[in-house]
Image (cartoon, rainbow, N blue to C red; front, top):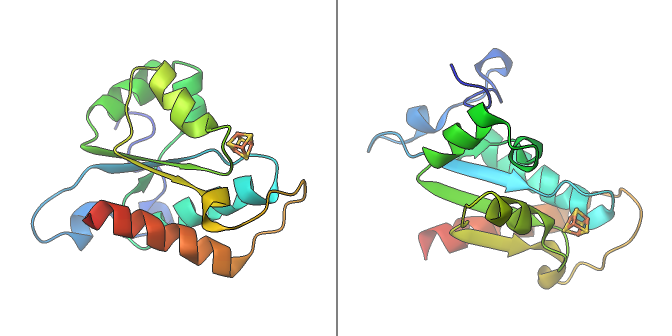
Length: 140
Ligand code: SF4
């Protein structure tokens, strides 16, 4: 199995996209900026929650930034790429674009009314809003 594919975990008992989708596998890869602020950590938690809910696979943005071949190749095989950024700096989206990828869905936590602060507080209501926005964008 190439690096980064499904590594979020059968070992942890998480459901895979294939198991959740009767229509067949949907390769939906989720990248969060996971930055060092409240909004960065909310982006990360929303991505984790979406993956745990079987909506997609949490993928390795650092591997994209580092041009790690296996992760880049696995990302090329993804059908839908989701980028979740904490703030308007758009690190996740820019990292993907720098490697030649264009995320079809891009959600920014601060655009949902969360003010950026340099703490690591993860507000669960904000996390839910971000995950819901991703789902809404995927449906649209
Ligand atoms: S998008 Fe904003 S919160 Fe996320 S890593 Fe970049 S600067 Fe930090």
